[in-house]
Length: 105
Image (cartoon, rainbow, N blue to C red; front, side):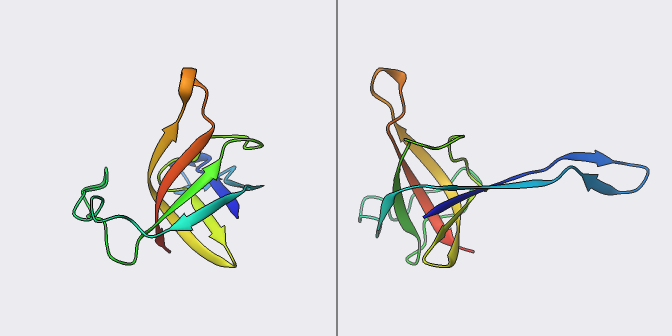
């Protein structure tokens, strides 16, 4: 798996473009599974619902340079998946795993 983070950079209103846009790829390790029945019907932060084709990726925090956030991309087996929601597992406030609801991009 690869966590892909795209930073927006800065917007220049005079040209109407963003400059300094960067993409950072970080290799991570994890598993994919289908959402449970309890997850069906839940809404994401953007108001959209969990779909039948959505998946859950549980990834380890070790080696990540930044925590995954909604809008980041997970590349799994060459396929790109958009992260819709992230739930960290953080005993003692130290993240060890991230459970990410993902949708094929």
